[in-house]
Amino acid sequence: METTTAAPIRITETALEELKRFITEHAVEGKMLRIGVKGGGCSGLSYILEMDEQKERDEVHSLEGISCLIDPAHALYLFGMEIDWKKGLDARGFVFNNPNASSTCGCGSSFAV
Image 1 (cartoon, rainbow, N blue to C red):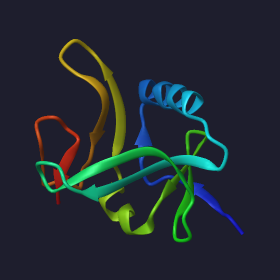
Image 2: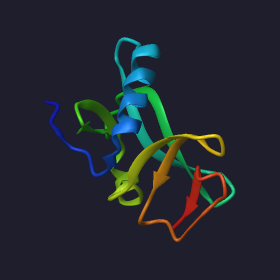
Image 3: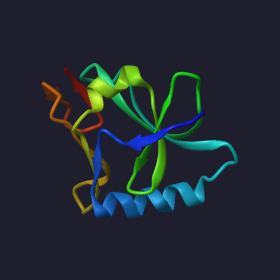
Image 4: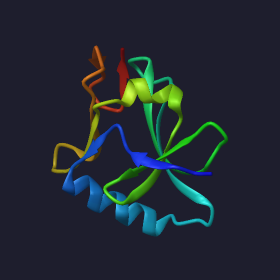
C-alpha cells in the first residue's frame, strides 16, 4: 500500500510553475518526479531532479500537489531544503537552498555536508 506524506522540502511559486511545465513536457506512464542526491559534483554531492519509476524503498511525498519520490537515505540531506527557479540574465534554472549544506559550489548544483 502506497502512503503519500508531505515532502520534507519546500518549493517556491516560480519553481512550482516550472516543475509543472517540466512534468507536462516529460510525462511518461509510471514515472514520477524524483528528488534526491548522488555522489559527484565539485562539492561532493549533486542534486537529482528527474522523472523516474518508483523503487521499492522510495517514499512518495506530495510537494504542492506534485507526487514526488524520495529515497529515505537521501531525506537527511534534503530536509528543510527549498527549491527555487531563477530566470534572470546571470542565472537560469533550479536553485537549491539547502540548510544542511556546509558548502556549495559556484553553480549551486552540488554541495557538501
